[in-house]
Length: 268
Ligand code: F6R
Image (cartoon, rainbow, N blue to C red; front, side, top):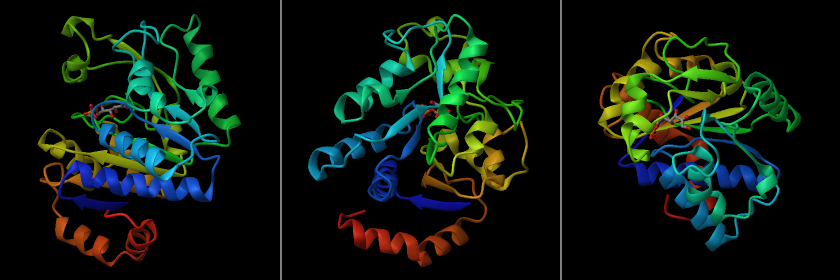
């Protein structure tokens, strides 16, 4: 794992956007895995800015989101489909037919989950998966105790996650109890994982995921077994890491990032 600590989330977002833009230049039909929640919002703003100012072209890109609440439709203001439309899809030239989220109203949920997996496979697999992390260590909505080999399926959200996400709903009691999420096994098949975290609230889960044992009690710790995961933290989210000085040294010496900074021609 490569652990990149930046002064704030805005700087992480600029680096991650530069990374994704480079990948899109090399592979215009890139398959992107996307996340919702507060964490990726600065990244999506940056991608929109690059689309508007630099002509970053999403026309051949395909996107698969990690998860969706069960029991609410795409037009519900708290749905992840709605979130993605407002935060990203409505502002870039990603073809609507190329955007995929699980359907929270699917009549046969099991068949729908199998179909979602099949669609990912048919697209050639996810090239770059963007991930946030829950304060309990979840990735996607794979709550603690999720099988590290799980596939897309329904999950019951913990009361902690429902509390954390209550801000997206008018009434905390409206946060659905169940969801459909890509499994940890699904996420692990992505060629590259980019895990983003910001804020002190994430520091414990981040330290457990990166420096603790691999355990279903911290689902993000499964990424220790992923061959190409890059983790972008702000100072607060990195606050409980023991090997901080080492991560900073590795990043400072990293030829790839130094070259990307030059190539990109922006202040990263
Ligand atoms: C959302 C998702 C979740 C979030 C996590 C962090 O699609 O998969 O794992 O990334 O709950 O949420 P925020 O960013 O709101 O703190």
